[in-house]
Length: 112
Image (cartoon, rainbow, N blue to C red):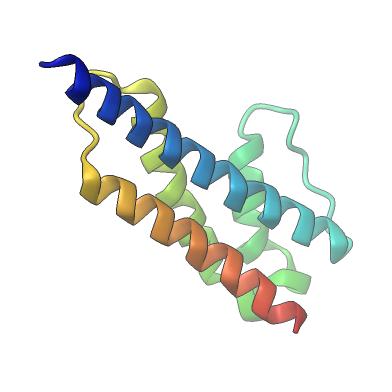
């Protein structure tokens, strides 16, 4: 693999991770604004954020789909961050950014 290919893949991996954390932080903050306490410090803290959107009645009425979307994006982020033997291409990058935008936009639209 050439240096530029390694560099490009590293950038894609970092971008997926940043997109995930942007969506995760917005989802966490939104839930907290709705009065939902989420334990993010114990094991499974990230899953707790995404699961809150189906488990808490304050959130689940209109936002239940965020659980599936959040877990899907989290799996992609874990792949990008920890699975160095698996190639992360442009399609994964586009999927990750698109999924993060979908989550953020859905949460923003509920505030309008």
